[in-house]
Amino acid sequence: MHVERLGDHGPRLLLVHGSVAPGWATWSAQRELAEEGYQLVVPHRSGYPPNPPLELIDFEVQAGEVAELIEPGTHVVGHSYGGVISLLAVALAPDRVRSLCVIEPPALGLARSNPDVEAVIAKVNAILEAPGTTREAFARFVAAVGSSAKVPETLSPAQEASVRATLAERPPFEAVFDWAAIRAAGFPVLVVSGNHDPAYETICDTIARELNAERAVIPGAAHSVQRTGGAFNRRLRAFVDSAQASAAARR
Image (cartoon, rainbow, N blue to C red; front, side, top):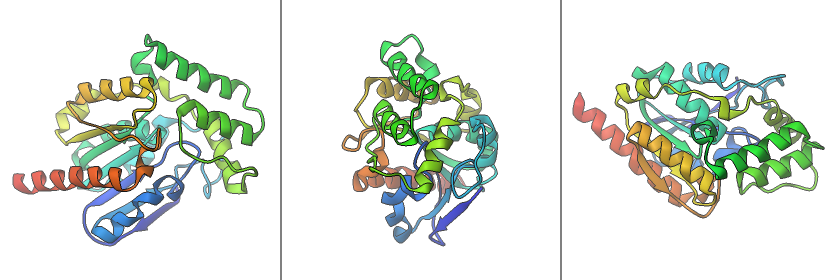
């Protein structure tokens, strides 16, 4: 798994990307945090470029891969599909996690009876069943999840590979989470949404209740809340700094 790092001191943030946009394509607005005293660890999940392609990308397998990157005192931040993986990964290494922040994880299986959630699932299933060209799949996926990502007229080879990786992902609504293990670990959790789709508000509210988590709603970039830049970064910094201070007080 290709991993990039930025910053050499301060709290360690492990940034786990979601579908379509690997690495800095998801986290470009967070680069400034490295200049403000944070270490950024940015993996490109297996199956996404520049890694070789995979026929199946399974969130359970990738949770194990991400867990291996969690060093003692790590703050795990996951966006979208990466949020599902992050919820699974921290349960595998709870003693090494300082905090967890998830941004609109599509853990849609938590509310299958909700009509808004079912509508999102139907849109995603339709793409998986008949994706069309990679550009068409990209555009339909962006619309289905409410992403603020721009769809270019012509996809680069890396974008083509990223769309194919997205189509190979195991549906995230099949994930089952170990809430008890996360609660027992006692690290703080922040759940963030963009107030653009009631389905994601429902899911984020559900996760926050399960984990007694902090809850934040930051509009302006739809599903890609981290792309609000300053607004999201300020909230993340405050959360991470608070977690750092609490850990220091316990020592």
